Length: 262
Ligand code: ADP
Ligand code: MG
Image 1 (cartoon, rainbow, N blue to C red):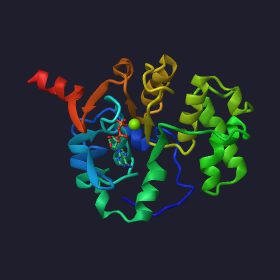
Image 2 (image 1 turned 180 degrees about the vertical axis):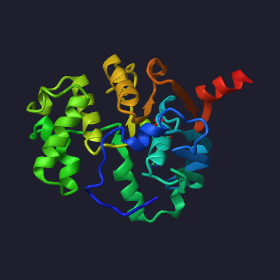
Image 3 (image 1 turned 90 degrees about the vertical axis):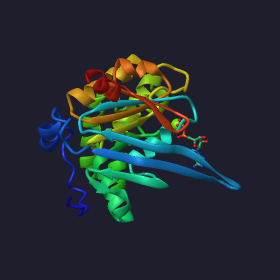
Image 4 (image 1 turned 120 degrees about the vertical axis):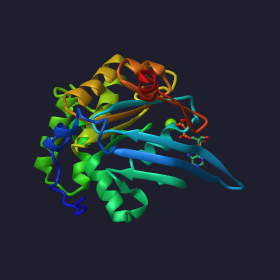
């Protein structure tokens, strides 16, 4: 893999590279592979095992929901998949590259090049328009204002907010706010979208508008989607659901389907 970082190396969503590999996942090297991955967090006098020896493959083009109760390790899992945190033991490979072989610079390059994050909690700048907010990640990368604004409008149209670019964050509905967070993650044309809790409150079901938007991004724009949620209703949109509890994978519907065939 070429790891030379170049800010102009931003390809459209669903690039030809993704399109050629979107449907034939079974025999391919997984896009993301966790092998016996554990995560320990230091809690002063003790450590907490947030993830316990997780084995997980996610292929290019999949739409996967990670479902589980609060504290079950969903966000820890997502941060690991997105190269934000490293496993304490076990391994993680992204496109076959072991994460422990990466320098900080390479890790950053991969994160920027391939991942769009919608964190559990995020804020839009209140004094900046929606379009300005969505353009921010590209502005931080030093792209020209014109390119940033054009990319922001494209990202807004991907989430159906093309007529709302001029609005201020306080004027947005709850669903528009969630879509704005997704647009901000899409502005850099990621291959993988990682969405941590797509409903505003933990106990809310996934809003149908957001569920169908993520499905559209996956099926029409060929973006690999990982959605973290407490709600099993995510299964209405995500073909694959992974249930986590106490830091372990309890059920993976794709494995269950595969074993049912044998
Ligand atoms: P979820 O997203 O499923 O609610 P998390 O992945 O955020 O759960 O956290 C899993 C467990 O790890 C929880 O018990 C949480 O308190 C703990 N944890 C998460 N992050 C940290 C951290 N930075 N330091 C200490 N403990 C943490
Ligand atoms: Mg969480």
